[in-house]
Length: 294
Image (cartoon, rainbow, N blue to C red):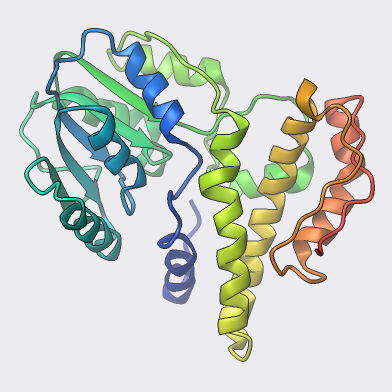
C-alpha cells in the first residue's frame, strides 16, 4: 500500500468511520460462512481482526453465542465500537481493543474462530495466515474475505486503482495456495453477492462523500483528497457495475443512474467513459445513458 499524508488518513477515516461497514459484506453472507464451520463450538471464542467500527462484530454477536475480542489499530473506530457494545448491553461478551493485527498480543491457541473482513491483506495475506494459525485452537476456523481478480484484462483505470492499494492482489488459486501452504484446510469459499456491495457499503459511502464535499467546500486540500476518494470510488463502482451487468437479473438494463449529489462529478465522468469497456469485457451489456445526477 502506498504511503499517504496524515491529512489523507484524517479524511479517509472521516469517510469510512460512519459507514455501517468498512468494506463489502452483509449479515446473510456472515451467516452463510458460519454455516460452513460445522464443528464450531456452541459458545466459541472469536477474534475479529481488523474490525473497524465493528459492523460485522455486532452481527457475529447476533449470530453466535460466543465471546468476541475485536481488534483494530485505529483507536477512534474502537471507541465507536465500544460505544455500540455498551448501547446493546454486550459488554459481557464483546471486548473491543486498539491493537496491531500483525501482533494481536493474544495467547496462542486461544480462539475457536478468527474472523476478518477485508483486512488481512493489509499486513500481507501469508503473514496474516501465519498469525491466525498460531492463535487458533486445534480444529478452529478462520473466516476471511479478500479481493481477488476474477477476469482477465481489467480496464487500465481499475487495475491501476487496485495496484495502488493492493499490489499483491492475486487470483483465487493464489489465495487457495496460500491457505494450504500456511497449514490450513480449505473447507469452502464463495463470492459475495451483489447486495453485499451496495446496501451497507457503496450506497452509504456515496451519501457520505456528498456530505463531506459540502462540509469542505472551502478547504482546497480536503476537497482534493475527497476528489481522490471519489476517483477511487468511481473506479470500484464501474468495475462492480460491470460485474452486475453480466448477471441475468441485469441483462435488460438500459440506463444506470448514479445519484447522491455527485453533480458533474468524476463518478459520472468515469462511469460514462467506462461504458464501452464494460461492454467489451463483460459481453452483451447494455449500459447506455449513464447519468451522474438525479
